[in-house]
Image 1 (cartoon, helix red, strand yellow):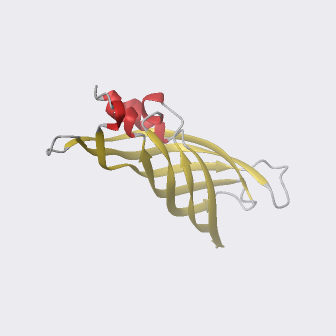
Image 2: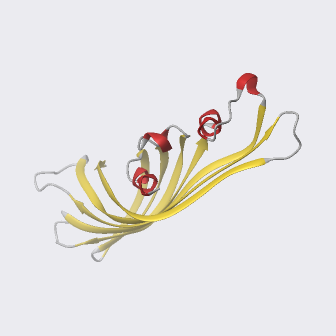
Length: 171
């Protein structure tokens, strides 16, 4: 299950963010699309979704080249129901299973170091970011086999610490 937590760190996302700089720190808010890419056991079960988050950046130097970023975020994903059912050993031939509800969600708290190269100036500024994160991953699908009146449920929740690594461009 620890591999499940690592996947949260390997999401690719397109983000819009808003920040306000004041006296060495900056409040940030972000939202965007999320695409699970790893590990395969998780990425195959879930489709794209969205994320929202917010936190604070604190500059460790006057040039704002090294910053500490503390954030909280939420990600919501849509299920790939046939893959989830297949993983449970249920073959959905001829769509004989009615999926009632399904969602994947990830809550995370992260403390990252954000580094911007010295040579950057202008409106497009690359950065690298990484650090530890506490994550809670919930996978939940409710389904009813056709001809049956009893619903069945797949539910799995995992909480663990992992590492987040990433890169991006501020503009």
